[in-house]
Length: 128
Image (cartoon, rainbow, N blue to C red; front, side, top):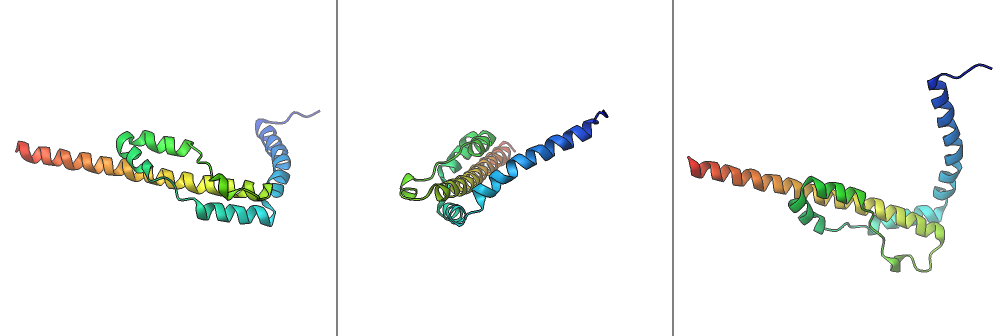
């Protein structure tokens, strides 16, 4: 029997994983309730402006923290909804809220850099 090269093995593993995961993605994302929930979750997610302060105080670490946290949707929006709707809403909400939180933290980090640069420039002017 002929042995597969490394690229052949990698391709076989990729195709196997693709065959296993594709039906799961179609089942989870194919229904109208899922899509409606996802759209409404994205619409309702605003993010938390407190990440702006975290970005000012912690800089790049706040951006990393905002990226790795997963905000939970408000429970009152999920009461009485189907499981497909809840799954879509939760995924849409978390994705959009996390992106907004990363944006807030990034703006705070940039503000911190700008304030530091301005203070450095003023200190330079005073010394001359």
